[in-house]
Length: 77
Image (cartoon, rainbow, N blue to C red; front, side, top):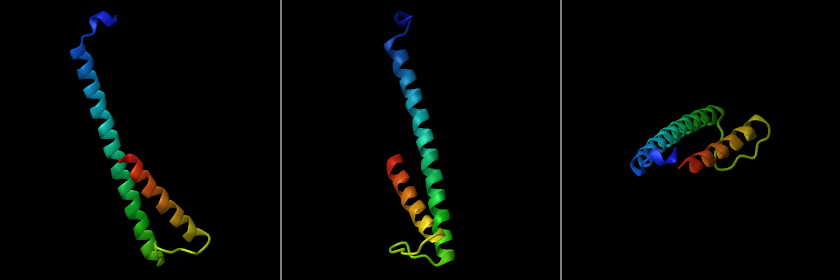
């Protein structure tokens, strides 16, 4: 079976898979950017300052989510 597969075929398949991976990562990056924009709008609406949040409850959760989104964006790149 492996004898029937040429190096050219393998390269072609690898390129196809790499393109698919790039598309998925690009989609994830776009999704993370949209989540980040949403968080920014929520923070602005609540009057939250991203630099120093000392509040508890929902506002603190927003801060944690913002940090998580930033980390996800770094991981995707």
